[in-house]
Image (cartoon, rainbow, N blue to C red):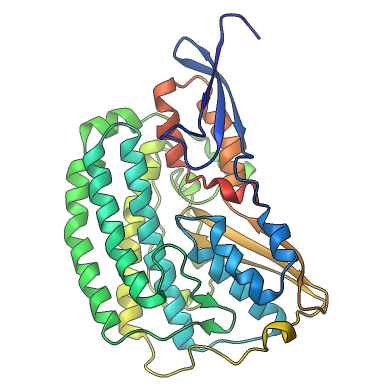
Length: 368
């Protein structure tokens, strides 16, 4: 290495890192000349853990693949199992699943907002957003018994029905968010400091975004309208009206504005779910007992739109009660390696956390 370059490690202990990972940086002064992502601080191996357990035992593992947003993992796993065994769930269960997915999406965006604002020292925004995320977690606790890991979206439907008055309380929370979002605009999204720090930083080339398979805000922040909920509808998303927000700046600010618009669209979807939720229907289809739940010799791929982009599960059975092959496709692998390492070159050291948080990287998806 050139003796003028200084090597430092951003993470895994650094508060600006997105989870248990590290970015090795070669600096010339304050300018980054090379960046290399390192994982290996988790040692989890989720896919192999799942393959060594029965279908029902494996269900308890999948939510750990992304702690801030466990519900898309549960939904993908359940839908993959249902697809392999030919199990159709009721419309009521589908609407409840959509409700859970969109609540999870808003909670994840609130957590992102705290991290993104904290990366440039705007602590007040993080205090607001984490409080508002807790309001959603309160509803999750009421619905599922858990605040972070819910283990609620289960093969065959959902584990329990809605508590009395739950939809009314959800509607009141949506009213609160509608009133609160303009305040976030004034303190964060329209803030001159954030604009100065985020505009023109972490710019992604549109052609590169398509060629390399970037997803979520990294893609929609380049003006490219892609969303699994619209492109390949699942559950009851084809019955709901919502927009796919895009922004053309291709930078950190564009990705932030896409997330801001997605919160509004999730509120719109949840209001439709409340209005259209069927009053009748089984929440859980009858499924085989633990040791008798066997998957046929077949395979399947299912995908959903997480708060960070397309999230997919490949699952294969061999006629036994265990999953022969399980593979997870999340946004973090390509965003955490190819994209992040490229974006950091020639950026200032102070922009590392800012750029990283804009990409929605969840390290367990990489070390899976």
